[in-house]
Amino acid sequence: MYQFYPQRVMSDIIKTDQELRRLEELNLLEEAGVNVYPYSYDKTHSSIDILTNFDDANPEVLSSVSVAGRIMSIRRMGKASFCHIQDDSGKIQIYLKQDELPDFYEKTKLLDIGDIIGVKGFVFRTRMGEVSVHSKEIVILCKSLKPLPVAKEEVDEQGNKIVHDAFADVELRYRKRYIDLIVNPEVKDTFKKRSKIIATMRNYFDEQGWIEVETPVLQPIYGGATARPFVTHHNALDIDLYLRIADELYLKRLIVGGFEGVYEISKNFRNEGMDKMHNPEFTSMEIYVAYKDYEWMMNMLEDLISKLCIAVNGTDEVEYDGQMISFKKPFRRASMYELLKEYTGHDLQGKTKDELISLCKEIDVPIDPKSSFMKVLDEIFSVKVQPNLIQPTFNMDYPLEMSPLAKKHRTKEGLVERFELFVSGFEVANAFSELNDPRDQRERLEDQARERAAGDDEAMILDEDFLNALEIGMPPTSGLGVGIDRLVMLLTGRKSIRDVLFFPQMKPETK
RNA sequence: GAUCGCGUAGCUCAGCGGUAGAGCAUCUGCCUUUUAAGCAGAGGGUCGAUGGUUCGAGACCAUCCGCGAUCACCA
Image (cartoon, rainbow, N blue to C red; front, side):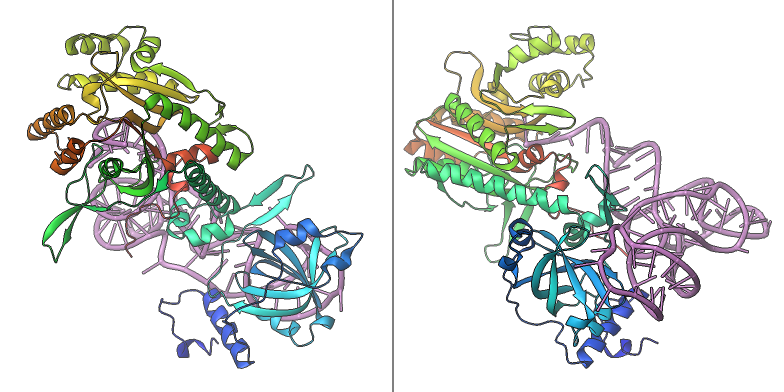
């Protein structure tokens, strides 16, 4: 039955009738002299060009076009057929008529959903009102050998698009993202927005004269954040290296070196759990600007984010998780202790650890009594305050012990000049007035080393060369880190980090 | 790592002890402006894997694999 199959073996095991049939079709086409994998195609229009430029009064303007794309549906009606092809900009309907394709029409029986074709013809509007390309010449640009899970679409009387039986298996969508991108248009849209967000951000920084730099991914000493790293090994040097958890310490070295504004959009790697907010590799943007402080940075960040939202959504508001979020400037600014007081009803400033622990019982915050002071405070904040920070809120002025790289607050004893931006209950950005007193920095890192020795394997490692750089001298500087993935989630309404990563981390398939 | 849920045709799902089902997709026939095209017919399954209970398991039990949610860990 499938006479061609044994001669043309695929790398994969062939399983289904549909796949065998497509292979047979490919062979029939080749026997008829068709190159099913040609080298190029001269495409004059995208589908969006045609749909937006067609004018019923002057159809001759589009009397000769060529389009190319993947077949997404076929409706055969005997001696005429309709299909939709999809290109990067969307879909357009193609009309095929036997009379006008004498050499090709017979071969359309060998076309399938998923094949990529090029079509030359003229543009017209069908009786049913759809702008379409009346084909005069069709070429196959790629034969698809596997069935595609295309869904059927319907437009109801209100003009809403209803999709039936969409490709929805989340595991398959992540593992076979290329299929997801083909059949689920909103997925592609999200990633186009992601690209736009990053491009807009780059443009914003470049216009200020800050420059984009690259610093090492493979680091002998990791630093700049508290997290467990991935370890790898360099054979020629015979040393272990760490995949970066942050690029902070290298970027500050560049400020020491005389750059007054540097930024890096980098993949960072943290060897920790995965969930809808965390992926082992993720993208962050860090920027350092000399002669500025964290107040300045808050102004810059709220300006930037409101512009990003407008660039991507056309407005500075976005609906996220059922709530309208407004990125209108200015964002709320409040100190950590103010927010704690607001949401717990207690002033926690000056409280001892034991006082905090007994308060935890009172306000119903579960806590391990062995936790450190900082841990308890952080826990109260996470449980009582953070979920309430829906609208963009700068949480300012953290306890010094929580922030070993931030500069002491100019007026508030025991605090540092640091802020984090929270939106919809999660953290999007983190920034400081950077600590540039090498004596203070050494003490803080030595404290970290002691905590490390005491068993905290996330405490920072003392980086002597970084301290050496600070001794050479770093100007007053403000630094900022933005979680790009989370920002993209917010601005595109996606609830899982996996929906803004093309290829989220998955366990290997075993079969 | 813990708990709960899910895994059946290419896709979306039903079936919950008694001969493996539907819609779409696919194939055959008819149909030259259709559009969730239509009409008539057909093929397609190691029911995630391995054990067990039972006369009989897709279903019940155990273990394992994968995915998701919640929690823990963690920005």
